[in-house]
Length: 457
Image 1 (cartoon, rainbow, N blue to C red):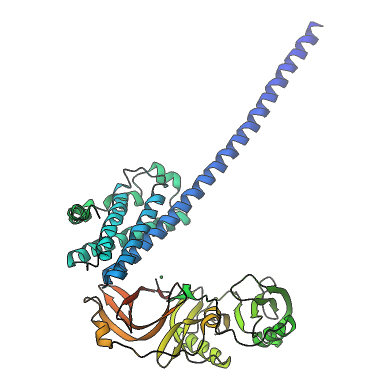
Image 2 (cartoon, rainbow, N blue to C red; image 1 turned 60 degrees about the vertical axis):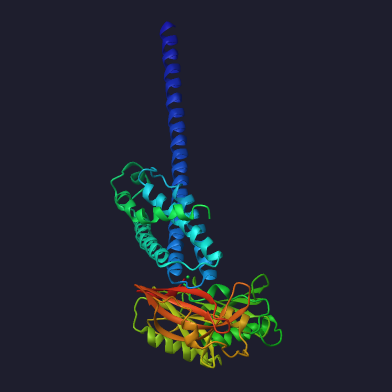
């Protein structure tokens, strides 16, 4: 009997131990999952902060470049105020990275000083004072530093994405590349600026203007309303009925900038899981956009030939007088921006984008929103100032490489008739727009010439 009781007691103890072990394993697994979820959430937060920091430092670089070339107090004040704003936002996201303040001291100091200095200079401009050569030299110094910092952040992002650096390493190891680079950004860069703060202490893929393409008037949206059956016919004719194996309607989409009938098309020689999409405007039956994504494994067609194919394509659709402006090449596909040209004046609001495959020249996409919103024949005014008078309002350091007339949009859905000057300061290319009626400096864009295309900011 005692032996039985002892056996029962042992089994009971073993059972309790096994239960405790099982509970420990389950609890450990739960805590491990919780830790993993927390780690993932923190890494996502760090990734987001790094992305935003890189974005805002890039904006600081862009606006500093524009500030170097701005020649009027009004435009200078606007640009420098943007530097101040973007630098402040960059500081916010910098503080969210898991790196000690000591390692990021120089970066934080840069963002703080560029913010304060740009704000003080914007006050000068608001009081209608032009920047001195010393001011411009200081802006150039800050710009050079911002380029270095931007390159460092972009490299860090690449290293993170490709797994060469983890956030754990960045937190624990102060000897990795980023920390070293930040440490090497010498505070001596700011020595000349420090004296100036006492004096003032109380006080852009897409191409040019592609973000200003929406209009409430939709001047280019001509013609009568059509029904879905007619839109289907337009879509078939545009794609080529002989290429289509199946077409499905997604109905009328009413919540966009332009009301459209939307269709999904399976091509006979295409991937069933990767249909072509096309949208036809309810008013007039115009092609608003068409897009087909496929792999392009070879680049046989040159950018120049692709431009000719796109131009012929537009002409075949009775869209004439379009001038190529900027392009971007990615994964064997080139996207080209075309602006309308009237009497040798580039009309940027009337924008069309076309995608060309560089393996066989196939038109893979077209987007006409800007053109349909804005296109009309303008009554272009006579320039009230000469081109030489307009040049007198440019930064004296700008080396002009081309000049002409252009109509540019504003964020208030108006248009301005300008002289367009393309030029270079140091190694940076710019487009500067001088109002052809008042001589006012209206806008400055930085031209980004990359291996994959020419873009603007």
